[in-house]
Length: 114
Image (cartoon, rainbow, N blue to C red):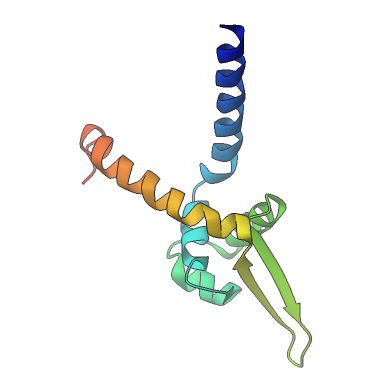
């Protein structure tokens, strides 16, 4: 029994850690936008309507620190910066899709969203 409780505790800690990154507004949209391939900052700003430059910059740093996004600088002129998903970020895409599908079937009506 203690083994089962320990496993539940590990799972809860892992889910809490995942949602500490993914639960922040915009992060899922940024990861999803990068699922289509590498993008520049301006490209991401266009792909995620409503996000400010400051928030996008902060979120990209957080996602890079979490190992989901890679920032690449190409020497110029002009110097260009692009962002792409890491392998971990790529593996997250189908999970985000599944989570979105689950939420639309199980939470949207209760929350009054549709």
